[in-house]
Image (cartoon, rainbow, N blue to C red; front, side):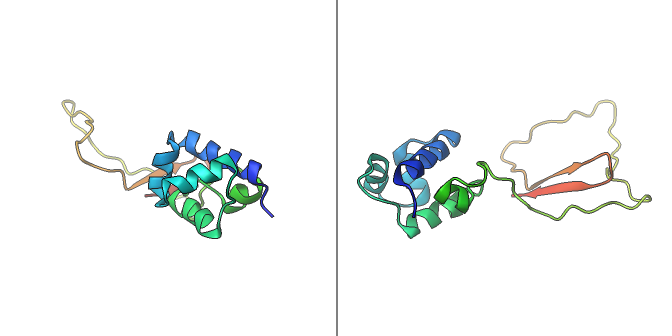
Length: 128
């Protein structure tokens, strides 16, 4: 059984992390604003639908953490399995840039993925 006051604390922690007001939080998970108000005041307990909407909308929220406080928030996201590179593979593709080249922040472009390469030859990929 979910402890309501602890659950409300964890919902508040999510809202603080994402810098959302209760009404903005309700809009994000597509529930009525009064549902959030009643939940935060302790009048109502969370429904399964509410919990699933939170976990679906906020990928850093772990279901078990939200329900019973076990685990961490924000959670670690396993995206791609980490693999080792062979000795012949280079973890970084080199690109030649002229002396007049500048790295700029392109307007209206989103990051699709980030790849972090470790010194031991492994890497981790984060995909949007």
